Image (cartoon, rainbow, N blue to C red; front, side, top):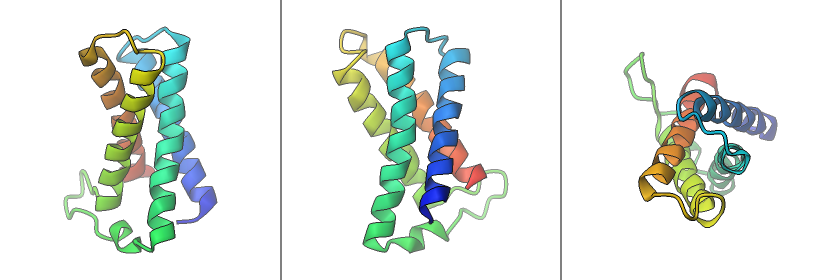
Length: 122
């Protein structure tokens, strides 16, 4: 995957996470929204860079043969990597005093945004 493609996908993931957090979670704290959107930008870029650097290109080509949701191992990795990175960034940053359930819900929506963008848009 080329660097411009990775960046565009990551940018779209950050935008999707921003929309989900504002509309679904109704999150209004700028630090939380910025941290989650930043993680949705950074984590897919890191994950796809790792796959490129290690030559694990086979993960890109095997989509689930289910047309409504053609997820691949690469797409799944994007979601998992984004979930972990977002949760870590939120727990050590703006949500350090929030309930774990709240942090998890915010991280889950962020990861869901990255996964959906990855599955359907690149």
